[in-house]
Amino acid sequence: MASDAALTELFRGIDLTGVLANAVLGGVLARGQRFDPVGFGALAIMSGLGGGMIRDTLLQRGTPVALTDYAYILTALAGAAIAFLVRIEGPVWDRVFPFVDALALGCWASAGASKTLGSGLGWLPAVLLGTITAVGGGMLRDVVLRRIPGIFGGNTLYATSALLAGGVMVVVYDLGRPSLGLVVSTLVGAGLTLLARWRGWQLPEAYIWRPSQNRVRYPRPHWRAHTGRRDPSPPRSDDTPFDSRESP
Image 1 (cartoon, rainbow, N blue to C red):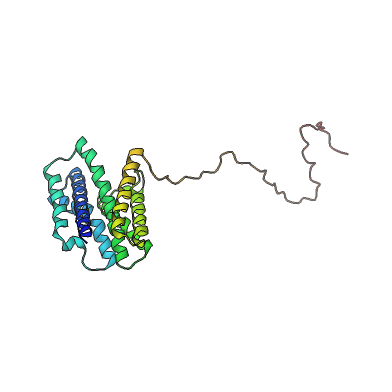
Image 2: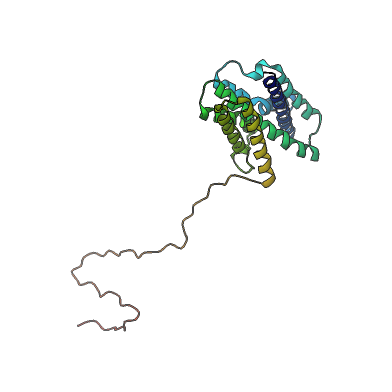
């Protein structure tokens, strides 16, 4: 029991760290749009807490955790304040954020799937809500900014990593080891996200089918009105001697 409590606290720490990192990212985008402090706070909350709030609303199992545990909203607002007061850029941010973001994605996907299974739902809703927990906040933020959500293409594997992490959580949960599932699925989701970023792995785009330009053209029939006269002789082939005289 003590180990489970320690694991719960560990995941809560990872969860809050991911909230802070994604809230800062929301603030960075708000700075690029020249928003005021209200815009910073709104984007930070959407980016850091949106996925979990959507999940809890769909599950209908009480008030969303972000509204009952003040640490979550305060952490998101702290990220907004950091981005508002400090210009976040440079190689340190570029190197640190992918690791924190990947770890948070794996944590959110596994926690979302675990909470869904604990609510009595099956494997498919668990995988779906685990993915929504991981990527829902970023999608909501991009829609508000009138941008195409990044998970829809053109980027390395992200939602796919969340799907796989949720699937691993479902399998290990069904084996009766939910605590182990949280650890394994988090590592799988984070590892695949980082590996895809390093190797540049992306899902293929849809192929656009174009008909061949070298189509075979068949001769069209020529229709003529009946005049009572005999139709002219059919054209001769090239290897037949041409005779310009009419047949008797």
